[in-house]
Length: 556
Image (tube, rainbow, N blue to C red; front, side, top):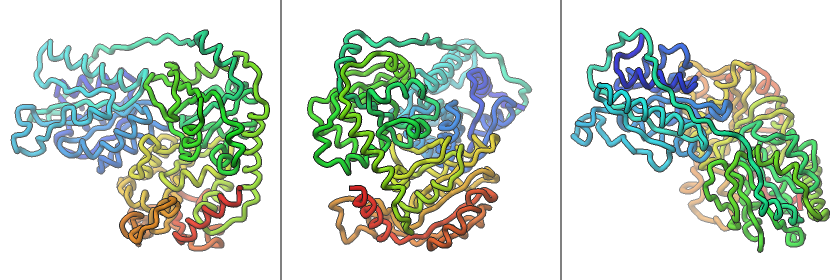
């Protein structure tokens, strides 16, 4: 049975019409008409969760895998604000999160009654659209609600996807659940014709360029036509990190998949082999070193390919924004002739990456987190899902090659540590039915901050959590110039927490490794054994930091 409230009925009906198939439902009484109606709807799969902050990141994890919108329902008051970190992450990852908040009647806002904060427009800086539904009934009010809900749902899914906020004021009585079916609501759609052609002026610039660097940032799997991208290999330099989800391609072509480390190793040759044209696709690049290098290149021209047409000048040389889908652009570019390519430029970048790959394969293992990440990735099965937490882990992973078919996710929209475990759980929920294992590599600060991700009645049976616990945020030890007597206590988040008792309480299989022999002995069962499971690896923070410096030095 559904709620009898007209706003709720219209909302759920339009969610179905706009093909919203999943919803995260958080606890609360004011939101109970929405929660009841979502749970009763056979077309929407619901996931109950108590912690709103974790729930919103869980929704992100589902969207990272599926690319489809996910609704999330919260009650009135501070519950809305608890979702805000993930809303901001969704905004910068361009993920279609539909945040639905129950609210008190507008007459009572700011009147010192329970949960009567200003919810309308509370998230206006990090959403694509924010609407406040009329609470009165009548033909005009029905039309108005329909229009607002359609507007929000269309904004969520394109042409620039992103989070939207639908605020639903609900007056008492709340608990009338007598409706047996949803109303048939008008559903508005937008048709966008496909197709892209490079303007003549830019086609001329492309043909004149001798040193072209194509930078592939964070993207969902299967975003780009890899056959078209492969055509650009040999006449341009393709730069990609793991988050581009192009590792299968990088293993089969000459490319600069270790550009970050090539800059470390390249020395003075970097000035000789500077690009003259950089074309960037996708989202974030993790490497600070690589971004700093491109910013330092004089007379560099940068083209940004972005469906949202927003001016994002990452490398400080932006000249042109191409408002199109990256895949459409790549297909057009692959068929355009390029002029006299500088072969030495291409050889430098691809050979530097190849040399680094060879050096890393012969790198001796050590019981330090950067090497343990490599050991795990060499043993991870093919066609799995890998969720990399911020901030050390995602950087450590870039040193090592991934198994074929790996899908990689990370919350790099705003790079926070606060929702990695919840997002990984969302990845696992979206992939559980397909039998795909999800491996979450995470540090202690990120894990313990987000422990409420595990607070639920059921955990997915395909979730494997590899926890690196050196009892602090170890990335701070690797920052040049940060030599403070308060580094560990006040900056790096020192702690003495362990995960064993927590896993017992939440129902995870647990194992611990405090040396290399134990790690190698436990690892096969962690990878292939029963899940949900957690392997806690306890390392020394000083040795972890030193191992990173030694590894970089070995590549010079």
